[in-house]
Image (tube, rainbow, N blue to C red; front, side, top):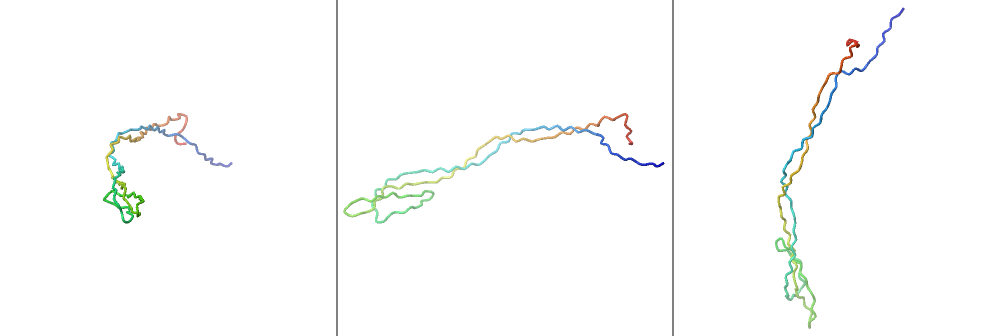
Length: 123
């Protein structure tokens, strides 16, 4: 006669966990600086005679583009007809924007599994 040991494993539920998720939404006011660039175009009549072609030049934030024409006279001369002035201005303004920010929260509930009365807890 011989004795042998038989070992086996069995999964037993000892506890259950239930999760609850709650989403909270909070309103936030943001103060955001926003830049915009505007371009102004101004046409300035000049009507002045030139000895040589006029070049593009800067006057502060303004760039001046000369517009010339050749006029047939007994001799050919340059006459400054107009200047086109392009001014760049940078404007900063604050925009108040209300945005929704979400935040999640988890609640954990634990409950013991029901005991099997026919099962010996020591086995």
